[in-house]
Length: 419
Figure 1 (cartoon, one colour):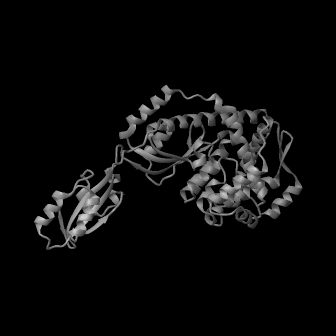
Figure 2: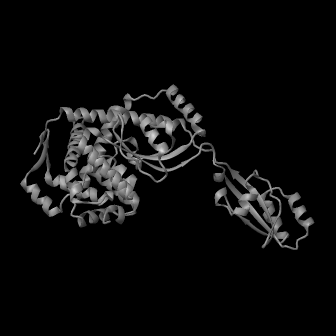
Figure 3: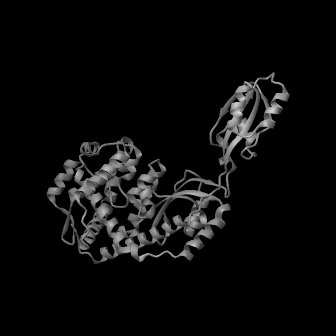
């Protein structure tokens, strides 16, 4: 597939957008330029969106998302593309209203950051866009709107959200109680139903996205392109969670899924969800993930048992044992901290139940007589629960909800003329 996804390192692919503002592809640049001459796509509070603007964003999406381009897909989604660009105009207008202006340097710095993350240069990105007949200005305009809206949301809503200690503590205790429950490694895409013009369009678009995801399109790239959830900036990743932490409809679905599956669209009060299950595991700690630093000592087969017994009796630390091994002409090799599941089976079987500072019983192998000493051990503690992370999650969800409501109000009050 000829796309950013296949030509660039993943970080640049995933970093290009944070929300549902990028749109879908259309005819080549020459046809787009002809339509630009012919007319206007929409006027938003006296701000013009040209058909050329729409086509450029369309081409940018197909160049970055990995989703297959087809005439049917393009025509089916053109109205949705335009509605997304209308939202962008409203976001920029609202930011300007409170005197938020994004300097050209900030936009360029953002592009340089994307280039660095993708092990590219700024000129490299511009060259790629030029090869696709996409003007750099199209990406710059998107990034400017993204930066402006993000700054507006922080300034307008952050100070209005308070997360109480009692609420954090309740969520923390709930998480602790759930430690022994089955955990799921989940990613999400949340589609904004307000951006659709009809239920038929919702079904068509969401169905097409699921189809593409199930065919192998990168879920995190699509999440960054489309999702309005707070997780969009990290590719939709929710991390390891229990089903009880999800909306009841999502929980019911994820319990029935197998790792590697992508769900059908799930309607909720917040919007339309698509979820992917990467993995799941039983609750509690996982002994196979306990880490061991093991010192293996190999003595010659004809070594007298009394000599090995004395070595065992004198064992204090791995460092001393390594020095003593030289005098005893025994080979010494240390693994460093490695998960039990990653150690050779013979060593794993011998040390799995040993604490740090203990020796396993001697084992006769084809190489000689071997001793295994546990120099260090770090056990898997299962899910890591952080009060700070709980607080951040609650905060970001509420700010995101307030931002969505405000954008919905802007749409309601705007004067939008579609051509």
